[in-house]
Structures are given as C-alpha cells and as structure tokens.
Length: 94
Image (cartoon, rainbow, N blue to C red; front, side, top):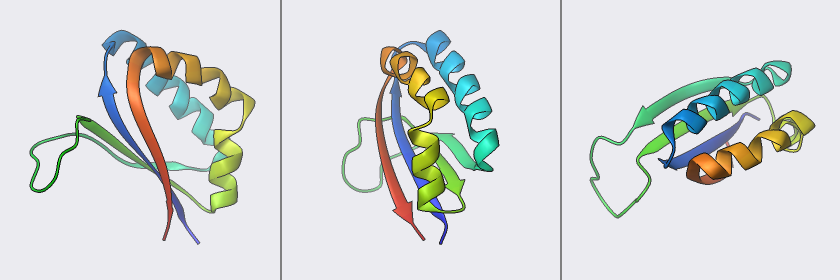
C-alpha cells in the first residue's frame, strides 16, 4: 500500500529552506521515494491554513517512509528545517 508524506510549510528563511530542500532530495534517493508535487498556496476555498507551501512525497510503503524519516541522513536535516520554516508533517496511506 502506497504511503504519502504531506508537508505544510511556512518558510521563514528562503536561503536555509533551499539548502534543506536540496538535502531532502538527496536523502530520498536510497528509499525510491518520489516528490509528487511541490506548490505554493493560490487561494483558500474553505477553512484556514497559515501555511503557504505544500509538498507531497510518495513512498512504496509506510515502513519505507518511516525508515527514511528516522534515517541518520534525514534526522541530520531537521535542525536546518526547523531554523528555516514552520512545518507540519503528516503521513497517509492510500
């Protein structure tokens, strides 16, 4: 069953955020994950969401997603992520 990571993002430091995004792209390769989409908010049709960007990443399984998230490579990127943006990360199965 496919697993998806949804990141909702409010960038506070564009330069640091760019470094984080580059690091994440490299960290995903060993896990055969793919970025389904990255986007910036266009409009709100219902509800409220203070985040202005979103990313959707697809993994083959939830186990693979969790292995990536807990990997040493990704864990090392978390301080950079947290200094660059406010991020909500949620996982889903489909």
